[in-house]
Length: 275
Image (cartoon, rainbow, N blue to C red; front, top):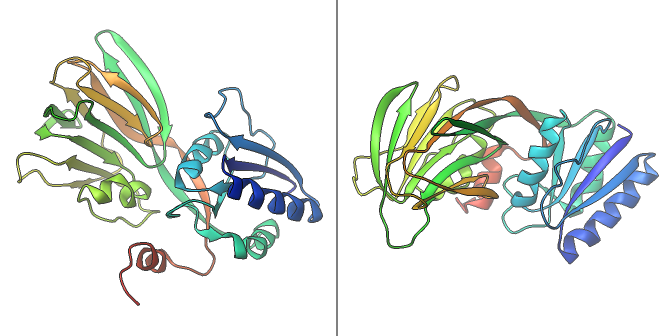
């Protein structure tokens, strides 16, 4: 690996850590480009010819970097300079040793499923791109109850009255879906996870579905009562009758995970499950 792309959170700690990583990589003979993720990722930014993306920041920075890297088939590794760090598994104190192993071809990789989303509005069909964690349709007003209808492979499944619905990947099962009562799914599995948000019908429960399913969410509430977000970072208001269609993406995100800590060790640490 000779060309490395540093994708850095706009914080003083992350920038300081990225400088030390940059110097280390240069000593290893790598050519390094640094991008500060301050105001979104420019559409024209290309990773063609790069061998690795190193994300320095938290999970939000990682998600933004992963969407970019996956478009060019570039693997990603995350160095934690955020608050939680489910995706940025590597702490800065161990980053040099782990990066050295990755550069030598000894890294531990996982291929993660992504979601592809499009919006159908009348005669208009608009692709909305790919995401790694989740697609969320939620209410745009604090006091209002939303009404949504969910289809799986064209079959009506459930009408949801409440705060919305989450369609998640296994990677995203430890994000918003977890706080909404969804199950934790092993991250390199391939499934679609459907989780209602605060449903007013208590029998509405999370569903775990095969990866070849297509999920559709139709908005039954009035215009602009619902808001659509992808990975919690890109969003738009929805109108009554809009159909949000979510399926497994053709792209995958390749992630270098921690070489010594298992997913269960990370869960125990992050969720404080005990010794």
